[in-house]
Length: 149
Length: 175
Image 1 (cartoon, chains in turn brown, yellow):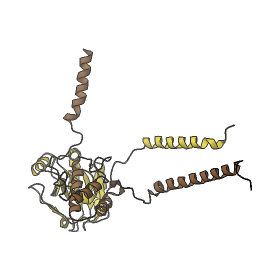
Image 2: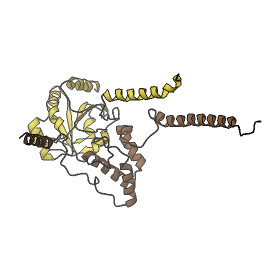
Image 3: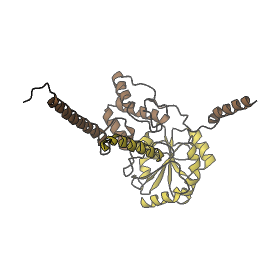
Image 4: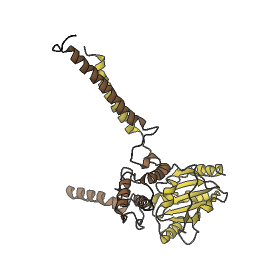
């Protein structure tokens, strides 16, 4: 009897989210170029590469290429139609960054806030090289086999 | 006796662990704010989203009167929640222009019949094109637009009762 109650409770937990959708979505069909590839293979490759580096605004840890959110579809439509119209991927990225900030782009940029990310590894590498050179240098002069000048 | 220098890695580790722990307790801002505040609306023209109201174009925002541009949809839950606040804003004299995202005319009409119609115009943004131009990342969002069509303020999420005086003030500031 206890087991049956438990199963019923688990089933209710499974079904509950279905009855009350948390994220309502549009039922309007996707944008023409949300799921349709461009005829020109080179252009489509360019568009796909760009879509993988643009962030979905609704589902913030996915690229628009990976997301099924309607808004991501609308963004893919923008990318494909703009590429087809001859815009460069960089121009399209800039168009989005102008509206949503760096946030929308997965491509790392050196800016006022991100420069330490690029500077610190270089600095650490320099420190490591210095320490290493000093130690190696010392070891050589300590080596009894080396001729003493 | 251990040299004090040897404690540096441990201290560094403790510092970073502590920092990570502290950051976990901080509330994360999930909103993607529009960078378009202070910039003009783009050239656009949207067909009417439903029969009862005209569509929307850039010229409607350049008549010298500040307006609210409400980005919403009939399929959006929080939009139901903010409907009474939009009604209050309208009664306080705000001109509210609606932009319905990815919506159907009959669904828009049904929503308005059920939750009221505070809009002077409602345009249909079928491909979220205007929404992307505005730097808006969801529904509902409300923009304060001045009489020249310049975006003056962005409110992300549904309008709560406490936001109504603030939005009226922003409208007044945009005059």
